[in-house]
Length: 278
Image 1 (cartoon, rainbow, N blue to C red):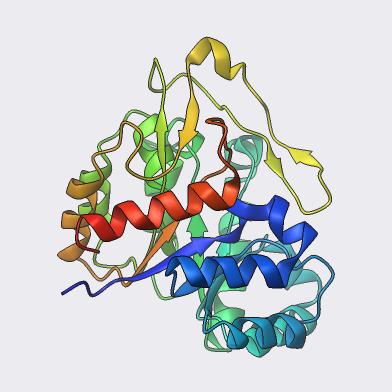
Image 2: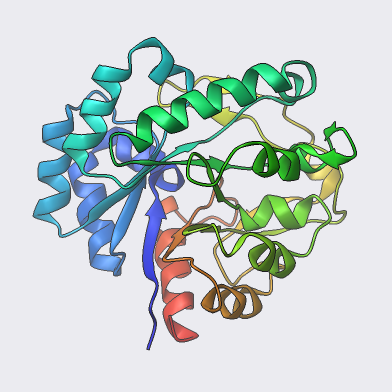
């Protein structure tokens, strides 16, 4: 029997969330997702968001939230998370330049935020991209250095399987490497001509602003795909996760390039996971 809770990172359907949050959450629930991870609230209060999640029997398990907001106004931001009832708050993005030039400062801030959240019953996570494997700190990559320098009770991984693989690593090995301290795993699929070809993305916030470098995806042959429709060995990743502390499998798809809508891709992803026994 599947022991994982299947969730959707709502960044995957941000176009629909912006148009109609309630209709989107209803559709996500009807697909069979049990929990959701937020990436922006589109002007709604925590009470409004929680009411909608409760209405459609979706558990708001986590959020993606940059860590400086908790240094600027911890009380307000933590109150929002407590009203939602989330267990986790994930740092979605720290720029390569910051990791390269401000590592010690970042580690201090992450420890501080991790402690603030821990004291309020919330676990801080870090969601990687590919560059954390290429930017070095000492003799190791930033991703590995981060988890050596910050205790797991203050920071746990939220490994993104797409970026682990695209950076040139074996996703299964990274699931095993951090499985004793990881509870939330991002499952994301893709195709590309070349692994480790550099950053391919610019994150888009809820206001439509881009943050980060965007490469020419056409030359790299990179496209996001629904889970099970790309180059990832999803059954192997899921099997590896079974032997870890991972509790939540979060589907994420940053972009949609096959002619299907974001909601159709989200449904294809969970349908595939269900088809292989999850």
